[in-house]
Amino acid sequence: MPKHKPERRAKPKDEDEDTSGATNAAYIFDIAGQASSAPGTEDGLLAAMGSNNSVQVYQATTLALEHRLEGHTDIVSGVKFAHTNPSMLYSSSLDGTIRCCDLRVSNKKPAQILKGYEGDQFFSLDVNCDDTVVCGGCQKRMPDTNVVLWDSRTGQIVHTYPDSHSDDITQVKFHPSIPHKLASGSTDGLISIFDVRQSDEDDAVENVLNTESSVSRIGWYGPNSDKLYCVTHVETLQLWDADEADQIGNFEDIKDYSGKELDHHAPVATIKHMKDKEVATETDDGTKKRSALGAVDYLVDCYWDTQQKKLLLAGGLHSGRLNVYKVKRKKKTLKPLYSLGGGHLSTIRCLHWQDKTQSLVTGGEDGLLCLWKPGVDLEKETKDLSLTSQAMPGKASSSVRTRLRLHTKKPY
Image (cartoon, rainbow, N blue to C red):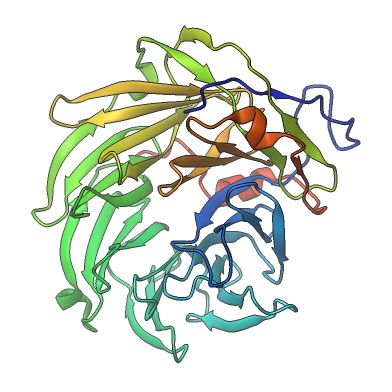
């Protein structure tokens, strides 16, 4: 991570800020990145979804704002770039639609709007690795909680799996290299693995993993992406062999974990998401601060470092600090790696790992995106860097947070 500690310039006074340092910027619920840069562009793009029903698109290396997408009439619940055509960006919403926008088109009107069945509200979203199938996971409704699959070329529903889950489907994740393999996670405690080539649900279900807890985040990992991690809403981490349906790791006391002393790092760049005020940073040759990497208040997510072949877990403090651990499955331990501070002002809700640049982007309830880069000349990297975004109103209400089940303590 950074070799020097940058200092943030004092932020300009903001009429939307209170004396506690909290802001009225929209919460950032999730971040997605392009698998590859679009033709004719050098840098990749990031998309961040906020609590104000919108999506904003940024340059991945500078966090400069590129696009602002609106149109959803309820909370945006998922965002995903296409793989083979990275200019296409999908977003799902509780308004019952999945919108696909072509970022090359100036008016940003959706190229496609996918709809499910009457009453479907989409809680999660993914697109398979060859961009032929789009999947939406639904919020609980009676009598069914649907996993809906569309043919991306025609926009028509090809399959629906209504019986595998009995509560909100918080995550749907296609395998990174097998286009027909899909995992779905739910607050009912189950992770279902499907072969989406099958129309009959009984034939499609390959395995069911019972986590006995409410599922917050899942993801494929490992050199062959044959394993799944699961972060639960009660702040535990589980590891599963997806093919054998065996639990191969269980970390239950992470909130009480206390590790060795580590170097603390500050972000390369920070911007306010969905605000009209400018936020900028500059750096100098600061000295590293050392203090104990102790317990965390909550877990954010895991990510797989392809270059290092490591599964990393990130957990945060409500003060805005993020602690990163290496997951050592065989030794059943977590090895502290980094403690990242000086960026966020409050709870961090999401992250995106950029494997190519070995950098991490985080988003939180303070409306900030923070970019963390390894081993760069920070003074050169951020000199005269000015990062801005467009105005968007409103912090998420408590009802929004409840509906999206952000780190709730719901037991299985």
